[in-house]
Amino acid sequence: MTFFLDVRTNPVGGPLGTSVSLYQGSNLANYASASRDQIVQHIQGRHVLIGTHGLNVNRADGIEHLDTWSGLLLQLNPTLDAFVGLLWPGDSIWLHGLDYPEEPKIADDAGHLLAPFLDDLLTAAASVSFSSHSLGARLVLRTISLMKTRVRHAMLMAGAIDDNCLTDEFQSAAVNVGTISVMASKGDEVLALAFPLGNFLSGIFDVGHPWWHGALGRNGPRQPWPANFKAPFQIPDGWHFSHGDYLAVAPVANSPSSMPTVVPPQGSAVPTNGSPGWSQVFSAGVVSTWFTE
Image: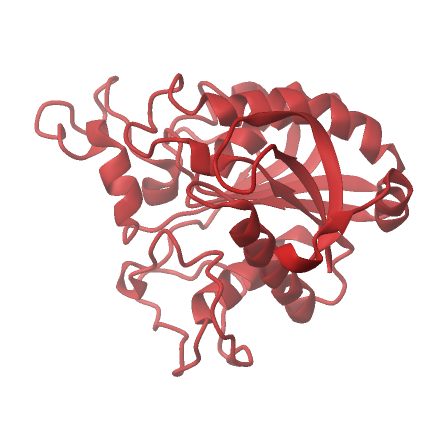
């Protein structure tokens, strides 16, 4: 059972809520309201990791994805202190053109809603960190940029946001984090299609042109990197790691003994050993190791 911060109004689609609601559950059937006292007790004196999903994820899928993934985090690193899931209406946003800041307004607005709430809620925590998937990167960065609380770590997986965001639009967020890192994959065809200036128009605006935009979750951050950025970040091309692999809900076998807990160099063998669900085991292993450093 996972605690959740929920800023949705509808189970599927719909607008952003006007307040942050507190819940607990592992699926939609047992999703029930939680009290502020329960959340405070859960985070009291602990290092808290808030994890969120990205695009095209309804409430039921968000609960299942994050509850399953948090279970993997704890299985792979029992010393992980406290996980809290964050649900938002990312399924209200049209996919095309995510490299334009005015498009994903719901993610930005959710950050404005969450920042003061978290500043107040997390006073009992030892620290707060964030992990995100896809367009959840924009929500997390907007939230961090508006928080008064200093953030310990931020991990942006498959970030559906411009690759220069850490030194441009969200430079203030990067400054408010102890360390920030990324998981990116050239096998992410969703991000290749969602960022047309980095793909379809590359013959006109190529890498290095000031108008060129690639996706953070495909190319990694554009250099120069912030001083607090932590590499490595590029998942080996031969793994064919796709956009949905980070938080996929699949039957998970025991983690292979060879499963890396850091992003390995190019040319590294795929760590499957025939094990289903290996990709989400890998992402959970990397995040759980990184979070507790």
